Length: 258
Image (cartoon, rainbow, N blue to C red):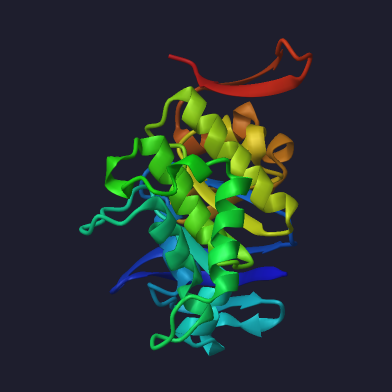
């Protein structure tokens, strides 16, 4: 179980997050949303321990993550950025294989099992055909899939994603969402930030809604993402519509009222 209890903190003397608490079980996909400056990125950084908290406890399977060394932390938590600039001409296979570095020391080379594990991940995400392609030559959606593959290759329990579908076309958004669902089906925790209140309805089973660094709500998308709550958070009129798509599936859309 991933538990956050009374988490507070920020940058220097400026406190951004105030008393954040939630708990997640394996296979949970949690969307984190709220206006700019509400603390989404600050929360991710504290979970990854790249920013020190001022108060509270983050624990994984009953153990305070502050007690983990960097290598132990890397075996539990993987971060998938919005974009990744790579200076060297690494192939897709080499980029994904880097996810295995937490599992061997700096003086050793990848084992046969590491190499096979990498190919297995590429196959699961249907990107084997990109294995020999230079990463920097890929499209934005393909790059994001490779970053997810690298995180899956790291074989951690928790995937932390910063706006994974941002600036992608619909096809690539679907590929990313399918990859996130695949990770959750294997029992991984998937946490992602988003600016789209509609997105959690497509993938998340939990939502953390923030405003000015404070929790407005935590629960299922249907419970939390209501017109009244979204209007409170974004300070504009919002409407939540239920529609039925061509597959006869009910989906919800969150729209501002201009």
